[in-house]
Length: 137
Image (tube, rainbow, N blue to C red):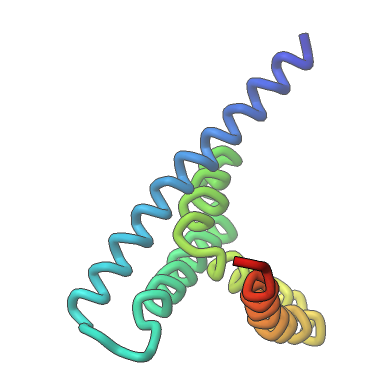
């Protein structure tokens, strides 16, 4: 019966991530809409910028609370970090991982990770757009 127990644990984890992701995605949509409503039209992608900064701040606050006070069990961490913040913005996970590398003194790895994530991420989007543009209508 170990398989059935493991399946229940995996299902519980999937549900935690899914519910958190739903909440994070809805929060992203709501905050982005709120920012656009008050900022008005702009060439700068202010809504995404605000969401990314907010997500990074919340990620830092939660990670700091985990490190300093040992709060949140594994399920709650999965719900909040992977689910809610993952649905809100994966940029917050990127920010946390880069910060952890810097805190461990792995400056070259942190720079490589940050630089290559930005440059290659933008390049991958461009390649995807170009690839679709080459398909027949």
